[in-house]
Length: 100
Image 1 (cartoon, rainbow, N blue to C red):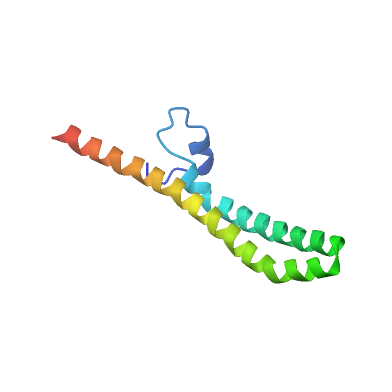
Image 2 (image 1 turned 90 degrees about the vertical axis):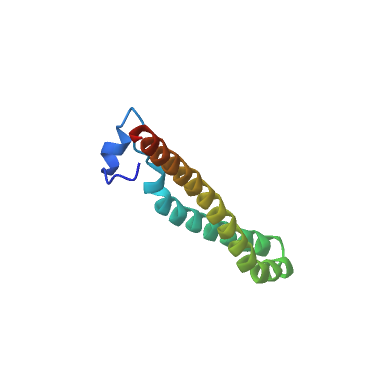
């Protein structure tokens, strides 16, 4: 599973012997950060359209909201990577037990 096959070769692997998620998780994380930033900006804009006071309040709290959303996205992606690493380790153990 840790082989260095190309992205498109992995994408067209119908036996699922190589996994694609570990290869795209960095890209997904960047997309998640951009989505969190746009969401925080949207919260601030919505606050200012409601009232100036709520806009300033959300302007103060939007960085905290942004950081919390990024942390949640990071934890979720780390859990996915952990699951894939467990699968890789189990495959290594299975190969080692077959050789004995």
